Image 1 (cartoon, one colour):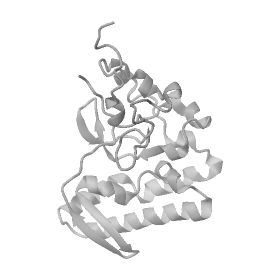
Image 2: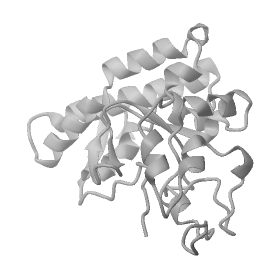
Image 3: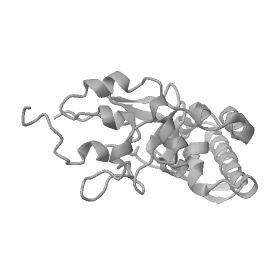
Image 4: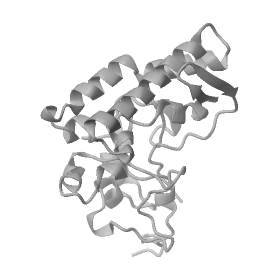
Length: 231
C-alpha cells in the first residue's frame, strides 16, 4: 500500500462536517446507536455545499445529518484525539470516505438518502405536523424573503418575521403539548428559521411576538454540506 493510501487519523474529514444518512443507516437510529438528538434535518431549499459540484446550492430534497459540535459543523462524534466515538457503527458515508480517493463516497453521496418520513411513523402524528410546517413555512419562501430583506424590498421583513414566529410557536407546542425534547427539534422540524438567516446575510433578533430587531450583515460561511477532502 502506498504511504498516502491509508488513514492518518488527522480528523480533517470529520471537521468538514458530519455525514448525511442513507437508507442503510436506518438501523443505527432504530437500535439507538444514533439518537434523534444527534441528528439535524436540512430542509428542501436550504443552502448547502455540494462537494460534487463544488458550490453552495439550494437542496433539491431534504437530508438528515449528524449534528456538529456547538455552533460548528465538526462532527459531534470526533474526539480531541481525532478518534471516532462511533467508529464501529459509523454511517455508510464514513465507511465509504477515503480522503485520498473519494470515488466510493461520490458513488453513494446522493443515493438513497434517509428522510424524516423514514424515521417517524404516521401514528406518531409527527409526519402530519412536519407536512403542515413545510406547507406554511417552506424554506424556499424563507430564502426568497431573506434575499428580498437584504435588498430592502417590500414587506419582506414583516413576512419573514411572521414565518419565524410560526416556526418558533410550533417548536414550543411540540415541547409543551407533545413531549418532544428540545434537542430533537432540529430533526423533527429542521433548524430554527432564525438560526439559518445569518448565512443569508441577515439576523433577526426576537424582542417579542410582534417585534424583531433587524441586522443586515455579510453572509457567513455555508458549512452544512458534507465536504469531500482531496489532498
